[in-house]
Every structure is written in C-alpha cells, then in structure tokens.
Amino acid sequence: MPILGSYFNLGDIYKQAVIGDADKYKVAFPFVRKSDQRKVIKPIQFLHDDPTALIDHGREWLSKIEMLKKLKFIEPEQVLFAYTAKRPNEDSLFDPFAEVLQLADILGVAMIDMIASEEIVRFANC
Image (cartoon, rainbow, N blue to C red):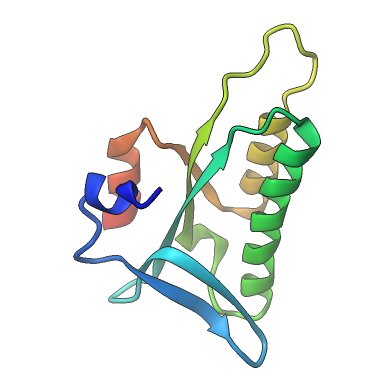
C-alpha cells in the first residue's frame, strides 16, 4: 500500500524507518514520524478468507508492538494500523476481524479504516 503516503500527503513528514535496536528487537515500518512526537502508521490488510489466518496476521503485528513497548521503543498509542478489511459475513456467529479490533483496543493501538481519511490525517498530524 505505498499509495498511502501520497494519498494522505504524508511523504514530507513520514519516512520509512526502523523502530527498535538491532541488539534487542527491531521492526521496519513504512511511515514513521520522528520529529517532535514519534508516530507510526502501518497500512495493513485483513482480506483473508481463513479466519485463523486473519487473526494470526493481526496478532503477529500486535505482538511486534507489544515487544517494542516492552523494550521502551514506542508506546502503542503512537501506532496506527490503517486497515482494509472485508465486510463480516452476516450469517456467521463469529467475526474474526472484530477479535483483532478488540485485541488492538486492549493494547492501545489505533485501528482506522482506510476509508476514514480524515481520521487518518488527524492521527498523523497531532
């Protein structure tokens, strides 16, 4: 999703960067603001047909944020996952994406639908 930077005009403030330390733990992110207040924006897709794969994908990225927090590299509140997701199946009793949203909320990571451009820009600029 490299279009995110040009679409939301983030290229002047946000650059690809690594958060962490090679001697401890590091994660590469496509959009990192290092100036006055560090922020991270990670475009992420939840278009999996398999519920297990969808949940595992979300948990993998949330786990990375947890580890960066534990090592004091970043706080979850400084991270936004700008997501694309399938609409839930109305016939299903279980929504795997809702599970990922709940886990992100517990950790403190912001999750904003890519459609909500004003909210993404608000997060990026504050």
